[in-house]
Length: 461
Ligand code: NAD
Ligand code: UGA
Image (cartoon, rainbow, N blue to C red; front, side, top):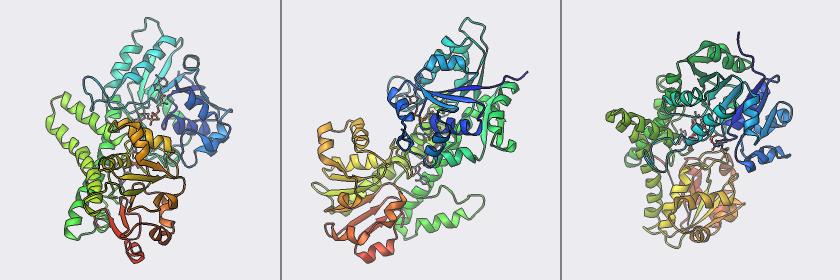
């Protein structure tokens, strides 16, 4: 007999846990979904009466939270109680790159996942299905199972791997209309219980069942392939700049080959986000741990090239501004790692800023969704200079025209749509001359910018 799920607990109210559970709740009105977290501030923000002030900005999210919160979607810090009341528990906590000890800078830090497993083992009094939602190294389910199976009680645990493929900025769209849902497990019963929850809105042929290890490894592989495409086109962008080929034209030409496909071929200042780099480094670490050095080197190059691309963009700014930016003001448009999100983790903007600050530039920033204190803490986290120096050298504005006033150059770091419709004539008039634009997203119309009078350069053209 199949277990019937009436209550779900999700541990981790972050970029994945929040939106994913909101959609599961919306599509399964008969299931009570409670998202728990150790972070009281984050839970309070999820419970904010004003749904436009949730801790995470995603188009469409506020509406779903408005419809479901308090009905069958809840946010709470009562972790133990919620775990024990639920038949199914998602683990959706962060799995950052280790910053200490063995595997420092490469391996995924699994301490939060392990804490969740131990917490579940400690408080569960009835059988549970435990779902790995976090991105985990292949064979992590083994470790979780070993913790859960050694509690001394007779509570039974089934472990499933159900990695999440949503991208930030399009999370709700990706969740409502996924390319596929992947469920890895050992036992068919447990797999089908989870498949049924998704089947409320996802067609059966898009719900893929595999063994646990394939599922875990598919997630790392998907991110590695996606990031590889960006590094590939970015590598070509550098060659374009030397040869008068245009990377947009090259991308279009190759993308029309149905075997290559048109998506994810936008040359840029470099990919950011919390996952690509972390997941590739993790893949590299795993390969090395099996002594597969050729495999490791192959994938490592994707992140090494990405570092080069960010550095190259910053270098180009310095070189173009007559080899010095000391005392000059550079205006940043965008700080988020991509448009339509307030997330800044691993954003190229942080690294470009850090580099220019080392060259003694001062930076003025405008981003439509990222608060000033987030930008400052991103820079402070790098520990390159003191907190007060960062505060002195970086000024954040809530108006783009103010941010760009009296600057020597504009650098576009995020592809926010609104940047395209600015009054660029007005921006030009208020800048120092010659007025430079460094378009790290190939967002603006080159001909138009040159016509206004800008010295315009972009990626790969
Ligand atoms: P996040 O940092 O936004 O959220 C994680 C949350 O877990 C935090 O709020 C933290 O307080 C909470 N937490 C940590 N340990 C806890 C514990 N022991 N008990 C209760 N709460 C705890 O992270 P995220 O971006 O949502 O990512 C979560 C996982 O999903 C990661 O493994 C990531 O690789 C993966 N993933 C992320 C994305 C994305 O777009 N961000 C997409 C797919 C997969
Ligand atoms: C990525 C994947 O797309 C998701 O499928 C995955 O679930 C997620 O990682 C994860 O595991 O966290 P995300 O990082 O949110 O999603 O956003 P992407 O749209 O993939 O963009 C990542 C970075 O690559 C951004 O900085 C973006 O600007 C850059 N990018 C993307 C390019 O430079 N060029 C492109 O053509 C596409």
